[in-house]
Amino acid sequence: MSGYEIAHLDELEELPINDGEFVWRPVRRRFGIEAFGANAYTAAAGQRVVEEHTEASLGHEELYVVVRGRATFTLDGEDVDAPAGTFVFVRPGTRRGAVAAEDGTAVLAIGAKAGAAYEPSPWEGSFAAFSYAELGDLERARAELETSIDAHPGAWQGHYNAACLEARFGDAGAALAHYRRAEELEPDEVRRRAADDSDLDAIRSAIAGQPEPGGAGA
Image 1 (tube, rainbow, N blue to C red):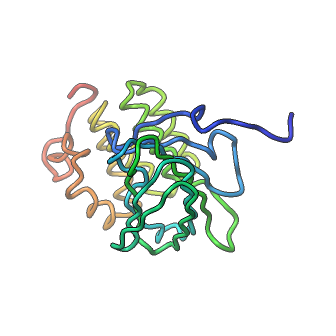
Image 2: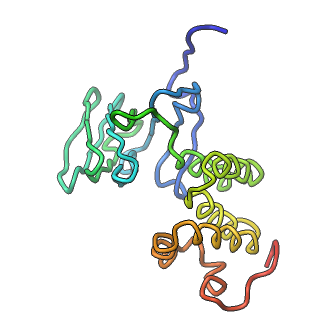
């Protein structure tokens, strides 16, 4: 086995996320990196290139590098112009997001939790699963979530995301089963998120205690 691997940005898998809100190009997954998180995102002008979020729950420090094009970052409400070559370092609790200001903009994100052994973030499998589902590959989508659940059996997120996936694309009965398991693991957080999550609309009445949906196609 060689001691190195090489891939161009445009050779990385291209996965649309959130119905195409932004495009994820997995880096860590492509190389099997185990020491830190690494992902790239590409966008046309006006398209989101970094989702709006914080890393408060994971405690990750993140470094964003604009490798081509230009992006406008919003950091705790402050807009920052970031042409190619710009480094943006963001601490865990800071809310961040970015929109491409030019076509072909690409941003590399590198992150990990200070002082802790790195573990791949559970969201990676969920991102991939929903993207494959939106591309029509439900079998691969389900496999991604099964792998994520197996890797983090005590985490509610995998079951919650599986519930959302099945409610949108597949089996309403399976969706409800996954939702109930997520609810057992973290009831308050799951109920809070479910309250306005349109992904769960197909099982909304069942969640509320009305008659449960049937199997596939119900």
